[in-house]
Image (cartoon, rainbow, N blue to C red; front, side, top):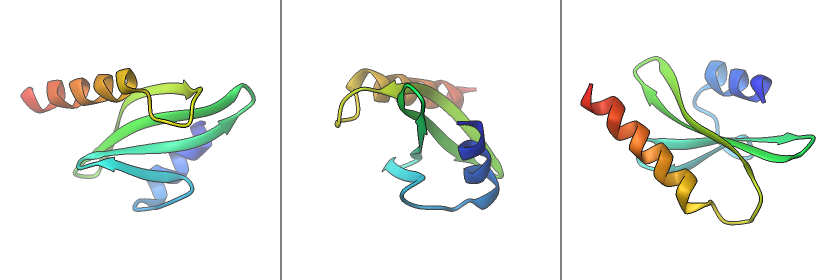
Length: 80
């Protein structure tokens, strides 16, 4: 997972299959790990990649609770 995040950080902007845009200001790093498929939702702020939420995906569709968590953390960051 760390290698995929590093690849995304230093190779930005990248696309599929490593990075997928979810919505404005939110992307996901897609990584295969021994226990399944991991995702880290992130945003970009200037030159920084801010990791908002990570989880192991268990279904085809993006879990609404995980996306909601990332949106809330992004909102909290923008308030500061």
